[in-house]
Image (cartoon, rainbow, N blue to C red; front, side, top):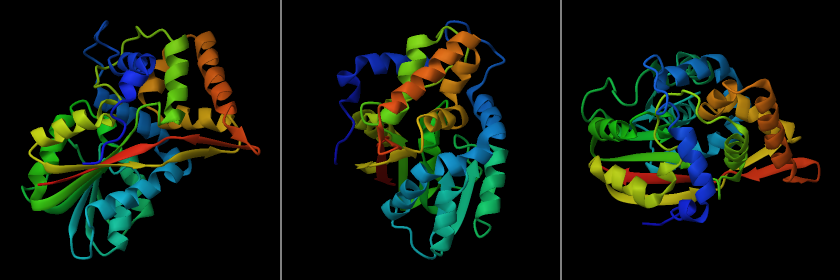
Length: 299
């Protein structure tokens, strides 16, 4: 098993502390009306149309890497969980697979259906899949477990719907020491925001960046042969302001906190992100590392 990202938390305890604050909002002031899945669904209802332009350049290639990791071949049946705008299932269909994509967001499913009509897409819950046991030869999940309240349930469901010997592959972002782009928002939010705002309880955002933690979770679900591999990803922008445009449309938790701040605090967070992105300008372009890690396992 190749290891990566495992020491991120110990190297950057300040970032880890910020991550815990972002991930556990709602615990000090719980509200029965708040639900992480509803928050995610509401965010993408308004922002799904921005995903392809902003996040697509960073996530399309990792989606192809997931297909390679599960040895996607013509004739196989593949499930793309938390499919977003459908890159995994769409590329799989082009390779000749019987591909199905599910996502909690109806807006994302609409985007996927428009972009990849040769694949099947439906609204669905990663933690409660509506498929029979052993229905698929392969399952992929592109950056989806970061958006789930109970990722262990999603791992168990992926295991259930896979046939014996089938492969499951997923991607997550590394912690901010390697995913430096995400660190801009984390640092700005933890430095300026009132972190006691009421948000739904959620798992730590970067917990699966730790290979040991992720391996244990996947093995608990029944998987074996955990393999991990870093995937280099770079955010590219024409100006530092593009970084803020990305965050306000693509991040869910950070922007939920942002929207609950005063106008003055919002301005400081925004300016901090833009200033941080400015330090990465070279030859009138912004390029910021945002490394991911891919896990591949077998049922």
